[in-house]
Image (cartoon, rainbow, N blue to C red; front, side, top):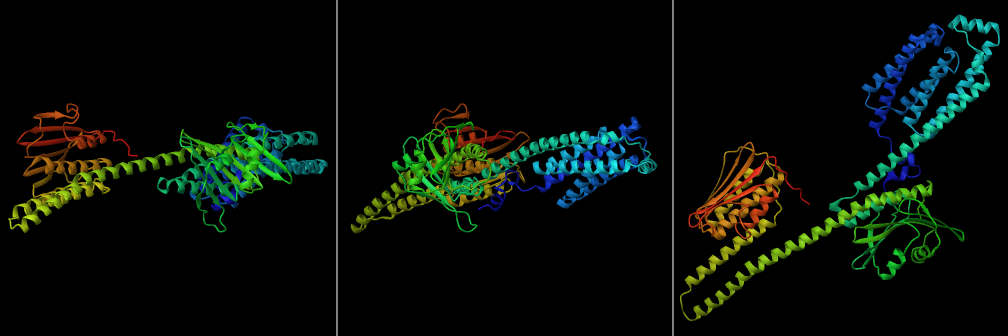
Length: 605
């Protein structure tokens, strides 16, 4: 089970741990806003000095506040991370500052009351609902404490004179009347509630996005369909605290039913998913019509509690408990959540979470589960399609190799067996067998070369621009050693900058061209040349054999079906290149491949 998901499962706001980089960015923005607010306030005071009653103490506090903001901004730019203690200390200063400056700004109804809203916004931006409400409550408490202190000082003439001597201010006691202060307190609490709610929703959405992204990251093509389902179900099990996760799916065309389950493991190791034996009875139990797209059912004593949502997340009435009772007859549970899925026109099914233990609001959780399945489902379906495509491609490739072996090596071995039988009879009759032995040896040599070429085609090619020239040279030299045909690789390039896909196809084209030289041309010499210009790469394969049945120079567009090397033509198309074939019957063949540097190479599956 994923410890991160298990730890933060119970609260939407805490389902994702704080990102140090995001926290640092938030603190930087708040520090910048704090400095901007202080500078703007000083400009406003300069324009209307009566806002502070010409108090030197108030001016000094504003300068100190601005210097403090600049210092915090500089610290955040130098430090790599912001600690929780540092953030709390800065926030405590922001909470205390508005109450302090309001004394010198003729009461809490001054325009500088904006500082109170800044600290509420900072709490919402940093944390969430409860922290913002706590900040609002702290501000209200400070205002009332300030009210008591100021009123107490102003009750006596000595206190009033002392305050004027210290600050040069005349404080209007009406500004600190309980009725006005009560309304200001209500404003702060309401504003804290609204800002905190907006922050909570934003963190809720971030948590959903992070969980969906984390679940999608578990999908790996190399893990296969079963491995992918296992990864996703482990995430769902940890996310919702379920004891077991099941899936029932049916192939729409064949009506075959597949049921699998993943049971919570005792340790921290991920649980293993396995398929169960299933049949049409399972289809009726698991795939019958449920009340909604996503459903919840729980047994409370003898009564059932149910909740169902349609595909749009709206609540629907649950009138029949039969589907839940059928599941409970084979899979005992106290509570159950099930959500439907459809994969194109191929599959339909349902995912079941048995005995989930989340503590959030059920309708909200069901909506998220429905959205999660809708987003993860297509990715899983793509894994299925790719897996099926690979199986078909593998089957087609195996069939091709089987056909090659049957038409080539197997037929040749049968012919060799027949010739050996003829030689045995000739030897018994005392006839010379040297000529027949030579023919058999040549036939065996030919089949060995064909089998090597077939094995070479089966190998996965891992060649890039750095290795291409060396691999091409080795390929041509090996061709010369194995066939006895004089062959050379010529290039004036010291390095190439081809994409890897183009490098692989260029190598395949050279291999196929040399195979054609050996099989069909009867040539004694072959030449492979690779060149480059500003606009394109050029590959040439030529020989002095008998050439194609046609004569002349043909581009790929002019060559009709069946004319020219078919496999090479297809490989040239794959790299957006151009093929030209020049054939002189009895004198040789020249293949020219041009690949533009800025061509768009199709992506492989």
